[in-house]
Image (cartoon, rainbow, N blue to C red):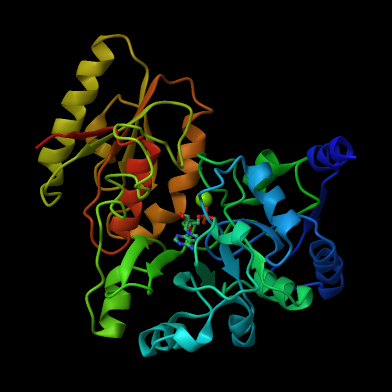
Length: 368
Ligand code: AMP
Ligand code: MG
């Protein structure tokens, strides 16, 4: 019997449903909601990246999410809700502070995730054994209507195999999840293209666990309070203390090796790109095929060197939005190594550097 159950989880016929977010077909979404209510897995769009959805109260479905992603059991999932009434089913609302309500009022629905005490109903499979839960209300018409029709909160980790770049388009999720889930909802490209900002409100001071689509400065301005930014949120070290020293995981990572060339100061872009160019030319002498991940402002300095354009430094929203697609494109090219420019760690620059550093497996070179 056990073997039968395992087989059922492995082989799936995936239904792909194209849903236009500006012209929702609620009958279609109702069918998808039924799949989730019956314990199925559904890939759905959010305003950040695509999520791998399952009923947050269904332990077996949640376990299958880990299995399908190949996600380590110690990496908890974010719970997505569609209305504020669901919060009390997910969190211990007696312990919610004024700061938390201030954040919810201002940023929900939207790409900001709160770490708060979990309710007893949320299974430990969702939180990886922790007594705190990550919650957010997404601002995407498909996501919010789907959850509403499910009448249950849903977990929604990024719908990519663990360690790989997150999916920001229907093409990405079809490539990553076909045959592994019951339904894929294809709603085209996502708006932000990076995940939500995660802030832990269960400690003495709010702590940034992951920079994301909402700049941390914006949250600080609203709260009139400093948010602690640990090195792990900057993408400089692993967050988990459980890891043995020296052990390095890659997240968001292309198969091709990636190096980040960082500077203390990006105000003189000419001098910075000349250093990048020199570094790349040296590597090319050893016969390596290299691609440079460059910005609009620096691209012209690289002459004959092949580049992939991330976007403009004056519009980091664009860079963040393109980042995961670009990381995926690297592997479609015939190159031995990708070299990425660094960005100033301000606003979305912090989010971009977190993803790039982790994608490189902390392969950071200072070129000042
Ligand atoms: P993803 O599902 O790919 O968007 O990643 C979710 C992120 O949220 C991971 O980095 C998790 O470690 C983090 N997360 C989820 N739940 C919790 C929690 N209860 N406490 C701390 N971090 C969490
Ligand atoms: Mg992820």
